[in-house]
Image (cartoon, rainbow over the protein chains, first blue to last red):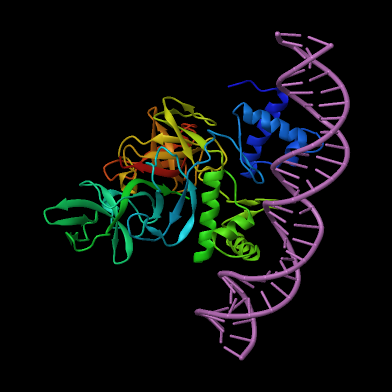
Length: 201
Length: 201
DNA sequence: GACATATTATATCAAATGATATCTATCGAG
DNA sequence: CTCGATAGATATCATTTGATATAATATGTC
């Protein structure tokens, strides 16, 4: 990458600093003010130099500066309390917030965090209130834990495909497995459990 | 968090989507156009509702929308297998990698992820191999789960301060509590458990 | 000396932008 | 019925903003 001049470096640093603190690139005049120049022409000249050297990408419109390679995606994942099945893309019912997740935990697609309700998986050490990171998918491998839509509720169950049916096994000795015969319901499995997260506060 | 209406959620989703793809919040007119309304008044009304419910923060200026908790700075936290106590700042023994963590999970200080060894907390549903997010601190409140240095090993225990001693209680019926008389050892507690994370892959 | 690059200043524009005011309509709670 | 919350339309304003044109200075290269 071509080296930057002192002024160009200062402008670039200001842009990244602005992105960090405001979540937004600066305007031309904010840049001008920061490098103590008057008017916008100088700032534009610096931006053009930065773009020519490949440090930034500009687009039209206000604050149209982006830094390539800069993870615009610290991957914000929605936290939901309920979902309505329907693959692909389960409909999010009540959004409870967002959470930054390590991109390595996700596997490409639109994952979400489901707040676990009930104790159906307590023997698998998943508790009421835990957050379950879910990847939407319509089926799973034997023994994996999935989100199943049962009576309109999204609950976690262990998945078993057996001859002629699917068995959804709660990990709670006081609960019985749910058998879904082939063709009986098609959108039962909403996704697969990738991770669980528990808070102690 | 207060629930959102359908329209409000659509606006919020559009803002996060814009942040992900453009690295920039949308303008009022971009929002208006996306929800197919004319003029800016409706979009402003929605933003006001979102701000009132705590989903966004607004500041003056163009694209003055921010989503609290959403940081462009993915906070990188070390994953460790062992630590050596010594407050402040336990010494990291074997670094196993790094992991991006939502800044909201941290509480200011240098937290780290400790890979849980053994089943001493299995009755609290913390398993061997789970990741424990730890905040370094030399003591804790009664009933909280802490990292204790016992025989040079970092293990999780439940903390109880009782008359003349500290009791470190494993959550495993086959294990006995550890009593540490006052003044007997000073650097037993290395930190407090904030969160646990389990992977299913 | 001629030329390119970097740097800055001044002045000006059209478009984009946030904000406000006014009005209408729906829906559910009290 | 009234009130509040939600939702929307229309119109208007003062700023902000990106962009352009023009000019000037300095530095290093060929």
